[in-house]
Length: 72
Image: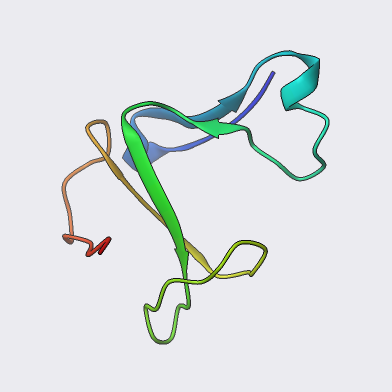
């Protein structure tokens, strides 16, 4: 099992279970049901399409309160 989390998330925000989910190199699995995420350009905060590098923004019930993120 692989996963991704950080102190601000109070636990994992994604995880992979089983051989089918861990085959993709570099993947940290699927988001937990209580989270939403997107990748943004760190200079402009514009959303980026799949496969592009940028800054990971996460929001959900388990994420510590802080700056409100616009996911629209």
